[in-house]
Image (cartoon, rainbow, N blue to C red; front, side, top):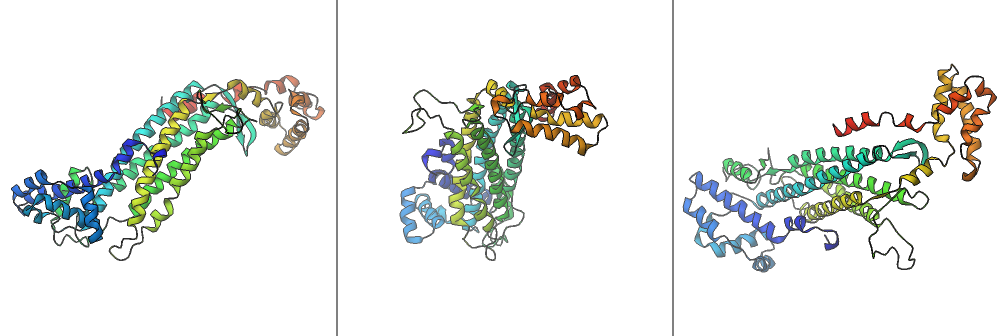
Length: 436
């Protein structure tokens, strides 16, 4: 992943040094387990820990000849350890190292991702409560529907990311597997207790049954989870982008001093951060198909999955980490315009209260079809007028409709044009979402 969309803590997990450190630790812990079982001398395990050093550049040089990264690593390790190195990798296969390392790296990545989601939930909750009663329009199909509050809108995202947190916790459990079971997973040359020992050292659990590899359905489920999280990020980003459009102007990304929006037009203030999040989300979701195709490997294993995972595992976790933290910053610094929200609420001249009138007429005994027609006939007249001539027009038309006045009074009609009616259950919704 390019530096532009990377954060150092997550990058470090996928560095060459971290990878080789984990490889060595797996080998050394396996030797400890063999020493505890009396398979190798205890002094050997101690020597391996003491002398187990590697040189990344030398490993690369050796790999040019061996065309095998694990063998190159073991060769370099053996050069530093000496005779005791003959006990390294006993009864193990390369996938024992590679797959267990991938599990460890993904697990470490999940810690960072969960920290990010928790912080996002915190800032979303704070902002939602700040705007719990800030009136805005709810839109369906991009068209004004009925009043909501901006806090309510933010609460929907909070709830979604709360579910994403739960999904990631499940995915973490799914991927936190260790396999040290030998060439085809039968433990023919290695005691299962060694796998158990190494698993505990890395807070993993042994894979129930592996072939030569940990089954890739686990990884497919994991990357699918990250893709769902990215889609939630894009939904939020898309909402902000729409609300920042000039014709809407209800919210705006923070625009810092000295920031420039366009090389050609000095006036521009563009939603570049959320546009960026939309693009990053597409990259994250692109991992789904190859991850799913990795499930079907030949017999006990082939390496068609290997190149895929070497790319998508670091790229997707690094990108998602960056995206979550960028979204946190967007929410924290979001500029909100309640006055413009109110102006937009009134653009349809009261049409957003049409359902209240419909329900009032049915409550008075009129059948729904007739009531709907009466309300719609008046509503369509409002649509035909320019915005500047719509103010309170719907209410005026209703109060002059002789058919409607046969059923309800003008005062009953006027009472329906009440914003508070639409937000009377906001407290109930917030208690259900935030569990306060």
